[in-house]
Length: 360
Ligand code: SAH
Ligand code: SF4
Image 1 (cartoon, rainbow, N blue to C red):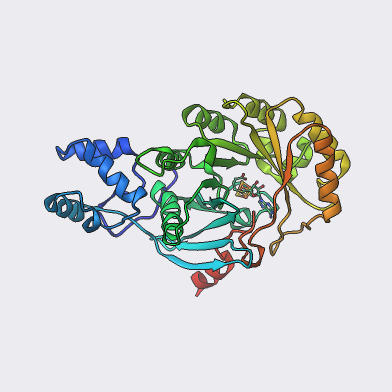
Image 2 (spheres, helix red, strand yellow):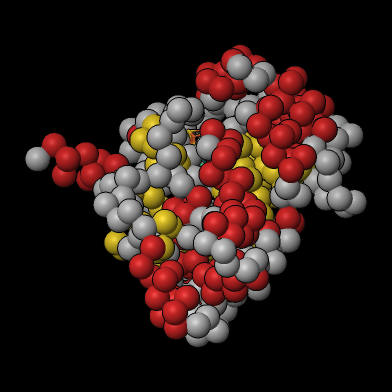
């Protein structure tokens, strides 16, 4: 089994990251009533309290019992960078020294948080900074939801509210299904963050069976990183394509259950001279025709050590126009937070700096 989460020196049970049903079972073993779990869950995710002393509707005795045998983990944000465009990036230092990043993207009335599900990533897509780090470990559900708690509280302090959560930070969420599922449960639960499935998006490189299984279990939205219109091209960019080639992936995308009016998102990173020609756009348009799929074009964000280049604006617009002319809903994702290396595909938790520290 892959290792999940940090090995903590603190042996008290971590209540953060436990979905309601688990919390209920946990308290039931102590002979406590079911509603205790709902109370604690509300304190942790709604009131964003992470010490038991602050849970004022619990008796003093119960609070003391909780404090003696449980904890609510809250890894520190070692730094928070703020971009000129208002995007904020936090770097969390986990208990075993690993680090992950999350990015808050304000946009008109939306506050979208992009969270990480793994430290590093094993899938090795050639254009992605996280991929270049290699795989370090899976995050626990506590480490995943803590990123949300941290930013929800930060927003609340200035009278704002988190509106959307996207699993588009570091890692492949569908390579960490057990912990991602627990985190999704908490994001959607009315005793957790209470977000609608429309506002929670799982982005995947295309792990077909896990994608279909998660879609059956939770009404979340899906984004699939397509990034190419032919298998040969996609396998070069994304080695996972050898296991789940385009035909199978597209068939799975068409099978995801959707509420009326909803679509699956296809993400397409435009790499200059590689996958951004009019012929590529034409092939992609034919491939998506008639499916409930919309396209998010992402001009490549450069990072050190990657051979690719960003396309010119005219190339991006031409690609978009071809898709739109074929009747495919297409938007170009605005580049946000590039000055603090917070844009898509730039998250690597300062891997190089960290390696230097470790070598000392
Ligand atoms: N592992 C998941 C989620 C994290 S990556 C996935 O691959 O979908 C989130 C998005 O960032 C993906 O769509 C990916 O294609 C995109 N991305 C990765 N590197 C990028 C880069 N350098 N520039 C622009 N987008 C990039
Ligand atoms: Fe992993 Fe996604 Fe980056 Fe590919 S694009 S290496 S799957 S994080």
